[in-house]
Amino acid sequence: MSVELPSTIAARVEHELVIKKSRFIATLVPALSVADADAEIAALRRHYWDARHNCVALIVGRHADQQRSSDDGEPSGTAGVPMLEVLRHRGVTDLVAVVTRYFGGVLLGAGGLVRAYSSAVSEALDTAQLVRRAVLTEVGVDVPAADAGRVDNWLREWTSGHGGVLEPPTWDEAAHFTVLVPPTQLGPLADDLAAFSAGSLRLETGADRVVDLPD
Figure (tube, rainbow, N blue to C red):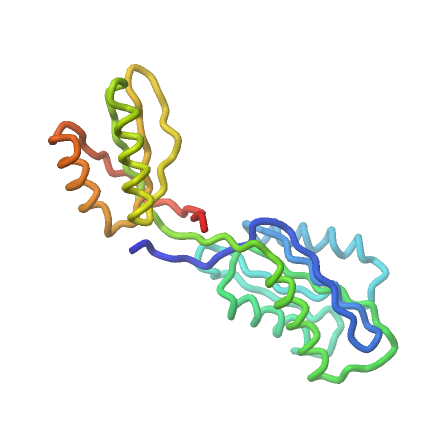
């Protein structure tokens, strides 16, 4: 099996809740680093300059290992941490969540704020397109041009049944295929390819890569 990693989101999403006249606008933005996240936070705070609060939760890193939150003036623990807990629970990374609040004049209390901020992020995630990720091993196969079409079809069928990804080939006097496969499937791929090609084709194993997987 492939080594599954936290998912991420394919694109920016925005979702709004109105609770007792307060507007909670959740914006989720892909961010590949803390610096990227900080830039998005600054841009959103400029855009919503007239809001009472712009609360933040971010998770970045291959294994979701960099995390941060901010209540931005809300009572301690009622905004940023609940937002971050939603991201953790949903198993995502490489994104920043900013929930902008326009105060409606009615106090929600600590419990109401926790529910509002966590619900805003959770419902925004429900509308996002998630991208699964995994660690796959890169494998190269060099194929004579005359056999490229037949091998291409075979590799497509093999990868679709074994959790792999076939990248577009490159060409010179031969076709050069790159296959990304779960590490546990390296042996089966080598055996199956040898049987298919009567031993004429061989694999060249490369590095592990983090790959966005199709649904």
